[in-house]
Length: 247
Image: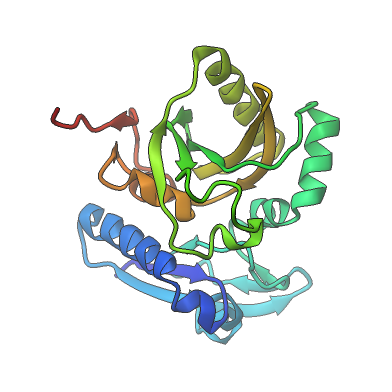
């Protein structure tokens, strides 16, 4: 029986957070609706990984995951233990070190850097990227909360946030260049960005569907949690569409 290990941040605060509960429900729903056979889903706090029986042995790189088991890892946190080697370790570490990533991208591909509360979803399939409609933070919260609290609170995000064509194409190009420079594996990415005097500024990159992706549930087909599951299991995704609503 296939097993999916969903990894979340350690600590009681994160484990009881209502936003995290909604994220877990969304990814578990995506797995259940797609699976043709029974799939076991286990939610594991990051600091508990090395205590699990799917850790094979310790080697010079760290605790290595057994490749003999039919298992899919789905991290929903950047806070992975330094000594645990997972398929996503490299990209997660790069995204976790925000200041270093900003400096790297500013030097390598000359992106503008700045804070922001907008998110461009990029569904990176094996055949290339698909760009979703931009997600924004509800106006009543924008600029009123410290950055480190934005993704820990049960805030309101919405999709689509409409951009002009003059901004849309440069935004897509920035995301493409960033993911290419990082050798990003197939997954759903949220590129967090800001708009300063009509200039796009890179803030940070999330290598999984985090809290803002909840705005896509019931709005985008497939939603970002389903899209992430499809990427992890190499299932094709042909397009991302906004579901029409009745007038």
